[in-house]
Image (cartoon, rainbow, N blue to C red):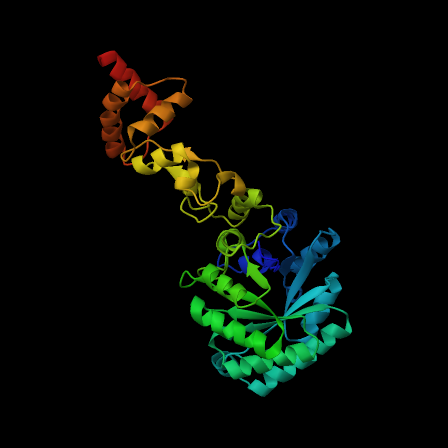
Length: 376
């Protein structure tokens, strides 16, 4: 495994909750924070203190938990926002500001010079209060590269600890991402964090490309929860870093399924069965060839073991099943099928599965077996 360390800053409680229609109760936010700390994330982006009310209070409570990770609060590049963050007791903040011309001109209705000045003032104020500072370049993926370098260099010169590269509308692709992140790091030397959105299904790929280019931080959410198509999922990023890049982070991955289930429930969603890493179907095998291979050696069709992410292997019996899977399934029931019985049972199983348009339940399999025995 490589010696290089990558840090995870999870923003489920901030960008995740900004998903349309999602609201976490204070209790849920505290529970999620505890779970994130337990699995071993390096930093939790807890929310936006400037919102006041419950939001500010729950951030204070999360800080008071004294969790074994950094707690970061999100702010605009506005000194009053940072004062609200100071009230909560956080030791780390994000200062976010638009850096693309389309955002500067049409959203902020100002100039590049104003953006640079706002960064200077907000970072100076934050550092005067001994805060860890991430300067977030909103819509960085559409920013002029020379201006982006100026933003990152200004942030570093005024004491910012890192620069968050935000692919705000998720339009980047990994090869271009690698080039841009490498350029920023080569030109400025600042630590870079990847904040990638999934509008094109490339959030994880872009995050990994950034890491390959030298980014030390990745901003994630549980299951990729986030605005529009969501963010880079923590479970995908962590497992992909380990299996494709040899970067094995000290994250308790065996909690991934439990964490996903809790966040899904808190956000009034379900964990899709096809969800990468934590979906139930990741370790569900029905196809005869696949099931046969997995029964002989799980590594034939599984990239990692189900135990690594808190799941269990399932051999499903349905239209595409073969006799080997059928024999193995009935062995679970304490019944040793002969080859002749398996060959006789399989067409009946497949016919029923086609009629029901799904894999069969245990009771249904036993009923078919019983009827076959009675008819023989």
